[in-house]
Image (cartoon, rainbow, N blue to C red; front, side, top):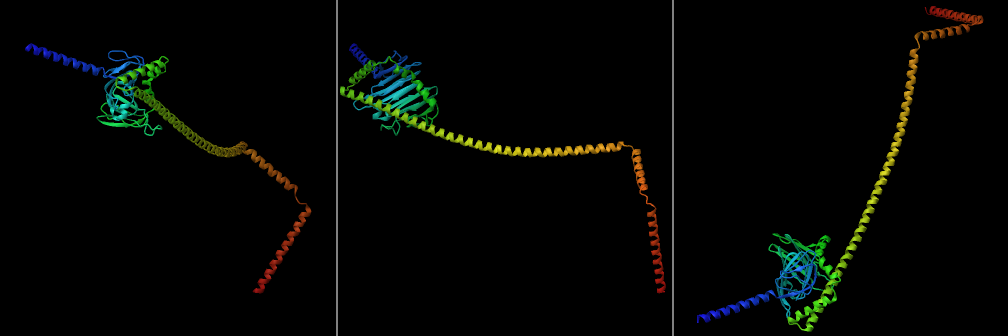
Length: 416
């Protein structure tokens, strides 16, 4: 009996272990998607990936330098992995009958670009991407994240609130234990660092956009290379059809799903092109307006400078005139000064000349003048006739005086 019990328990243990192993294998080998495009060397823990290879749950996909890959998930979502990246598909649950499910992927390093599919269409909060600094919740849109040392940058690419095609607006919730930021405007980004709440949503700059595009450069080159032909694309479609058939889809449903997917991709591309064209037009208009403003400002500045120059020239001319007048005055004063100096020089010369003449000469000259006068007087001596007339006049004067005296005496006598 003991032997039988031991055999039974052993068989039960063997069966349980085999069941557990089968369950483990089924979990590990759960299909998630297919490699759509590849560039460079992209590996998992056990193999090197090629276009058309299957991707299973919990596989770590590692893209080297200058490499990248695009994975098409069963719910029509697309995961594009950039260079120097490491991504793991942690959770993938999908019910094709109801489109219910859940997707959880984690990015350890590098870049991941996500275009949501049927699962997030049914429930926008069912697709999340885990990063070292927090989580990214996709709400039916297209976004890209870059994980670097101690920092994660997330960019919203998908359609915004007022898109022209009437598509459902997408958003990404960037959050951690300290807070959250909602990105709901296309080409807006937010950053997260360790131990801090996510930063505010900001419009991406040209340099930042170049950084995001650079991570996917290798894959874009691979897509444009001539090696990827229509045959490979057909094979990929066939494989997708097989997988969808194995999941219980019929031919018509498969065709409709593929067509819908293609149409959605086209619509998204058209919407993105239109948005880019509108942005370019707006930028051009702004640039033109700025140029006009700058021209007007420059013209005003030039006019002001000209006015200032004219004023300066007028002031300069006035100053020149004043200086000319001043110079004329200076010249006149100089001339006067020179004349005065000349007069002074003449006066000093005369004085010197006068001083140099001795006193004897002066006396001699005076004596000579006196002698000349005397000679002149001598020459003008009256003749005898003149003497006689003078004598007569004198006599007449004497007589008159004598007569006056007699009269005066007579008067005195009479008074007595």
